[in-house]
Length: 517
Image 1 (cartoon, helix red, strand yellow):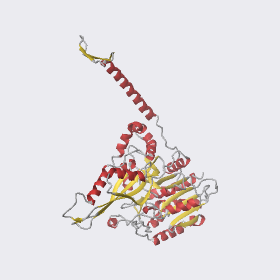
Image 2: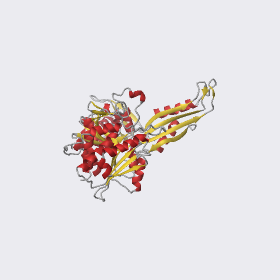
Image 3: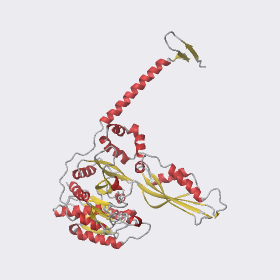
Image 4: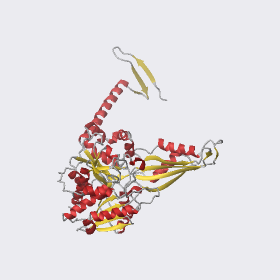
């Protein structure tokens, strides 16, 4: 048996000691505490040394290139974008058919406005209202590149039309800007790319590698009749491009905290998309004799539980890449956290979770969007449905979301059904490759003193349909945007500044040149 003897004694000029005889061993507590404090101090010094070393040795990943002189752009380029906006190529969704005459009119306008591209490039209409241009390269051994955009736009809400400073489909040029639906999303890409190609043809340029231009007609409603059909067609032709650029992120101004310079964010992946319908049935009847639980109550509890218990926040691979690129450019104390995410990742995530946009970066989001039940105020409904939309982080799947719903609501009475169009998160494109470096170089040549960083696109683009025909897919629009500009996308007073659009054309021209050197 273990014998424990406790002896308390005092020595003159000293302090009380306690000795424990445990299995004939003695513990000298004051000495032990000193040793623990020394070990703790040494551990702290080692930790600080590791933190500082990792911070100091964190190297910048920015490219170092000289800017290039901007080529003189066609004086009518601004007018061309203005005229393009006047075509009401609207994707309404909700089963409302498009006005095909508007799209046909726009397609004919492009043929007339860019006669060299229309005649010298091989042009095809895919699935009716979608365009594919093929600019044959001189060297068939080089993998092609693909530039894409979309011709359709979202509606301008009637209730807000009176709030527009300029009519949304007038294409007004005023105050150094082109106003109207599509000026930012996404006729800027369609017109900007064709302006650049027309310029290069006039200059006598012929590409070394084949270039495909793909312009879809239904990106705003999922791209299944446009981009998906074009991608299927390219796949049938055994096309495998090394590089694809679509719309997506922009050059941010005053948006990235702690960074004074503009930051060009390049989307290397985009979140997945899935909507689930939850439904529950129960016996109806007169409202004067309700059951303890009704379909509305059951479903409300489930929706509330899903809102209160979202999927776990995490730093996905695209966000990790963003932190790797932007970390070295941050002030010193912020740099410590970025360089030592093995210790501070929870703080970084907490910072992101401080805003709605930030939460969307680090979490698969849960958004209840539809709730339907009942027919009359004194009749108990026998059925209720709710639809929730999820934007899914790379590294998670639609099946993961379904399992999360089931485990969270814990109610077998509720039927869970995947509805509408859906897509898994896109593959994450490489950053340590010539294609990404060429894209970075092109950005910095046209927009000097701009930082670049890979990032995550939280919305959807047509690019998700092209992963089967392109190895490296990037999402970037060459325009400088501040916080106010971003609110205009799909909003009121959408507009593009004239200098922004001219720079956009120069960028596409430089990008094509760089990929053919």
